[in-house]
Image 1 (cartoon, rainbow, N blue to C red):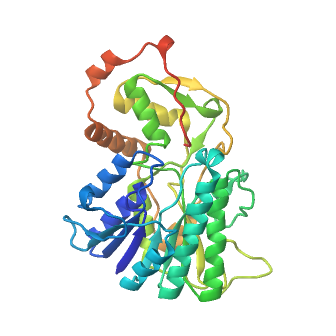
Image 2 (image 1 turned 90 degrees about the vertical axis):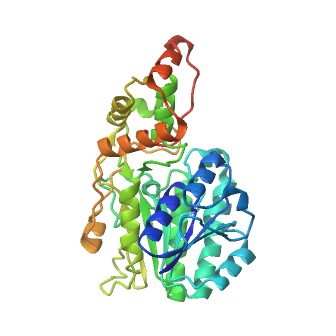
Image 3 (image 1 turned 30 degrees about the vertical axis):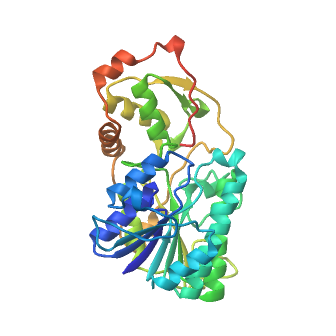
Length: 373
């Protein structure tokens, strides 16, 4: 197939594009390469995919030197003319929209970024898919949409009308917008509710990255809710495998859908929702312990109360993925954390003995603010 993947300088988009290319698909990648986090990491992901940094010019295609069927464009989803031209120049069989403004706590101080990227940008994607008659649109949602829900595990059949952050609200908005386009224009859409994705080439604003860096540098890590947190950490390869299986099976009408007892996960139009998570939450302190064991150094823990916009626990019900796609993520935390830290040491360079000598005494620690887990 010929597939458009937005956000290919990002963590999940980078890995998805690679897997699609390895299985023989043709991929067009798009990313605006914003500075929400270190752009050097984003350019490094692109270079790992054969996209030379010096050749990247806005709205100009760059062909990969590593994959002959991979073309990348630096492009803003809010560039309506540029997006329309992109869809006119290519006839995409499927679109996977992973480009978005991420992060929960960032939304407390930069709300406009979420409206611009996650809502206005997504509207342009929907419009382009509509006019190009794309056969299947998949898009990133988030476990954050479950908000105030406390019934575990989180199910796509649950109501999610009580978000606790603007980020979560923007992802819920994406699902509503997609349903409207599925209804009005018969556009098959699939929402991908990701659960705390981690692994090599991961985001620097996520817990694993923050904790690893701080422990290696002898700085404290911030443990929110006094450690009474758990997350359904999901390894990147498992996330990508779930997406691959869903790409190949476009959303279809649920002929048993009942408008008097509406199921949020499907519809009488080609619309559906899927959780992609491991289905096995891990406590934050157990997660930290695994990092410590892989690095061989102890963490200096700074226990703090719950932060605004956070939830105490996430846990994915992945029965839909299992029943419909015959797939369940399975990578253990032990294996996944090991893979990440091996990559981190390779990418940033790490000498355990040198780091031990450079570690600061606890009484002289610099306070470090961690972002969303």
